[in-house]
Length: 205
Ligand code: SAH
Image (cartoon, rainbow, N blue to C red; front, side, top):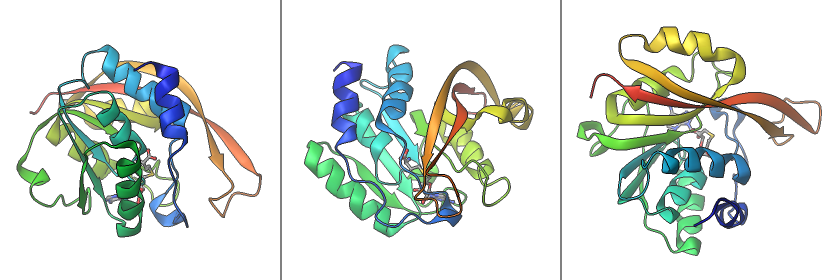
């Protein structure tokens, strides 16, 4: 599947019906989701691999990984309402994803005792709850060999320090993310923020 085909497939999926700001719920825009997934696919880390999506939301990254031929895809998400949307999205695309309701900071079985080839995620950036991204980074490094994640552009030096000894940043690709006005506290229609697609190797699994 080509990048543009993946974008179009993901573009048609449903997003959060009523985004909850405290959970930093926003759907990764299809072009950005496709870029993150193609970065991983280009390294041979999607097709035939076991993939874990942390904070899978309405399932854009998980469904995209499945479309690109992952051997298995698991999505962990705290919000049951988001999982219901994700299930419908996966069904519409005809892909198979295992959805697990749970907290990334306290992973339920069977995810808790598994290691995955690849983790993909768009974690909370910590705009609402300080350091809300940390449980995501911790879980990703503990359960994935290679991690592909979006981060707020400015936070890379902190990330490198936070994961020192546990993970290693291999590559970063700059992008921009338009946050929609659905996040009620934003006054403008959309805010564009610089983000980084980051490839991390776990040093602990
Ligand atoms: N991966 C989706 C959603 C990103 S938004 C996408 O790319 O479109 C971040 C998601 O993480 C939201 O769905 C939110 O409900 C979820 N989330 C936030 N904190 C969480 C936690 N501690 N455990 C599990 N999910 C969490």
